[in-house]
Length: 290
Image (cartoon, rainbow, N blue to C red):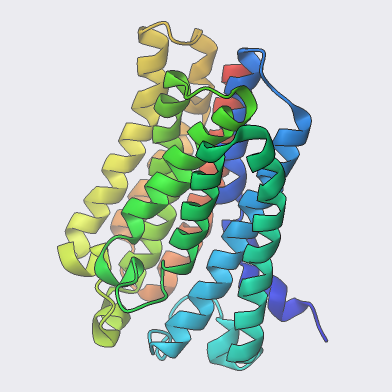
């Protein structure tokens, strides 16, 4: 059996969304003397598997609910027939199961708080598109992306390392969450017509085209304001402003989003938004380390 459809369904371009919060949360743990490599590796693998499981579930349940009939974005393996619904369902269970298995190690070390983070992260991944009240279909996808790939993943990683809920980790989770949310925002902006037709009431469908573009722009602005605030309040040294090196990129990206009209023009913006999230997060982690 070919691995290509499974790799395609995993959506490799979205996987930095799982990596960045682990990098930032671990960098904060390092600066506080609490970094532990086994925890870093386990958290990274578990986060990647949860992201892959979420992508598989999204592929499957969007197909079952008819949201992919007039697909404008990258190929979906279930809709295109590359994999059967049963196969994708099994793949989803395997990905989440492996994440849970790795999570046992983290729970043994970190206790009940880590257990709750793991359980709710997996549940959010499943019910992002599954169930009668799925998150993505009721305008909550953006919010839960911000919470689970921003706040929970970043602060939870620091908590797993140090055993403490850290104020700096909570603050640093905001730009991580804003920029990962923007990946969802571009996807939903592109899909407004097809999602509306399929009854998928994303936040973009609810608030409309123009407001969604403003949502993206405000999230970018907030992401760059947080490191500035951290330096101003002396929660971190001025080198925490390293992510500002990506500001020209963010400006061009936001400008391109405002100019984009046809569905196909959003796909490059989607990929570049994921890249911005990765580079911003890597520079933020480096600034916190230094």
